[in-house]
Length: 197
Length: 127
Image (cartoon, rainbow over all chains, first blue to last red; front, side):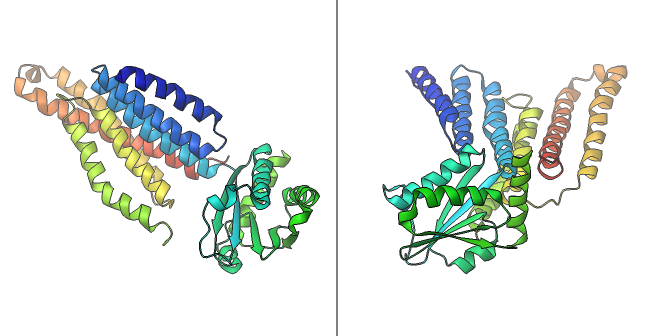
């Protein structure tokens, strides 16, 4: 019984890890997968192997993958709306037009092999841009959506064409920022260089 | 770094326990499951976890490589010396201290080696 449960959940976790579109989730699924395998070794009276599996696969490789993800080309998107006290994740996935837009941006990044990371916050634009670690800032102000992106980055150009074509009813306006903070510039340049090659 | 204060506080609380557990697995490895490699990997996981929380490069890689080489030399020299000296083969009391000492050496070597591996990858290799 224990065996069967573990085997079935192993298969489910393996499929989830492959099919998941967010890399961070895949890493977590793989970590749980290895932890279950180490339980299975323990069940088969092999504690030595179980310890090695738990430490190496569930601990070290998860940390190694997370380290690699830190160096992966992550496209950081920030969604700010000062009118709300708190912004929850539900706010984006609801079937609204705005949710569809964020989903479109996400698909845009995935199609270009970038890992999208969307952060929603009620903080003001100043606070967010001073932190300087977002490649794209989407700000809602009443009915208007303003998108702040680096003027040097051609990804922003492509995104502008796409969004204005499909979402003209949302009052989308693009604002080009020249020299933003160093960190943001660096990562954006890194992504364009990688894309060009 | 106020944004990461929850994670860094929790990991700060956990560090001593992780180190204790790793050393326990190394020292007790000769008669319970575990041993030098597993305990060393736990110690290395602690160092790498610290990098995930606070990515500052305050580890001198050259010095760590030097320490690792010294431990590796000890791992080779100590068993060889013990085998060559005939007197040691007749003393049964030496068996347990010898196993513990070797497990400790291998554990520290594995810990330092894995940490160097990840830190080199994280800070020096270009993508």
